[in-house]
Length: 343
Image 1: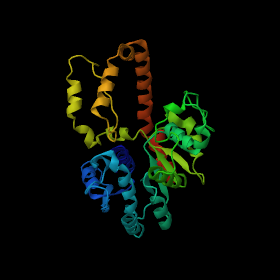
Image 2: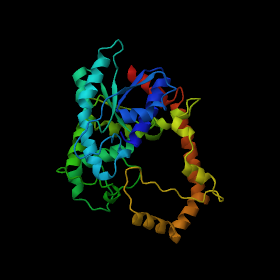
Image 3: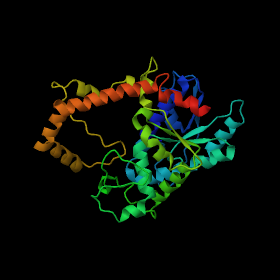
């Protein structure tokens, strides 16, 4: 129930649908309405609506983080999702008792309570992660070894047990959400709960592809118990671009994209994104703009855009893009992984 989670899950639904796997999306009315047009060309995908709870401290009709007035409502929203358990179980029971019971449930990391629900009905729960294998491994390792990291310098290179990092990482590089968490706060208690459910899941679905992160999969799987396997099925966004099944939300050019395309000088715009949940003040945006105008930054951007380093980087990205597209095509690692998981 956040766009950064919903969109890849929709792409995953389309990917499974293209392999003639029946997909049922259980979601709330407002989210279902926004999804309906996107999946209209996929007859094997259906929607089941369950009501979003009305709770104190959360504005009415907020069923997605994009609808929150500010990030101060983020925690109440997360806690409210736990009240979806009863209607979810009612929907799951109906499906289990049908002629075509579900072979598994794929639920987002933040919906940790779905593990207990699935266990109650004997249905395997696969947890979904929109982040890549390496980034999730770093996140899990820093949480798991938080006490050991507490005494380390902010600038000394981190050596995470069981992991071989392809770059130098320091404690100052870690975002606040994983940098020495305070387990007494409600948010971190919530994260700890969903983390424990995550570790006990039957399997893991990751929005990445083996050719990119295969060497990091064993370290990632080590954080799961009972031999859970990680299935790389991405890049999920590419499935919507295959053949005629183009994603509806990609067919409509937005005003910002059109403005960028109409600029007189090619490659003259730097796009800076903070994500939909970032609360950035005008003064902070001004500071970013001032920084981008600094001579050192300008020279660095020019080198990356037109210099030898930039050309080399683009060549590597283009080569990686070709590998990614092959991964989601028939015979590719991501394309074939769902069938292997089913076996």
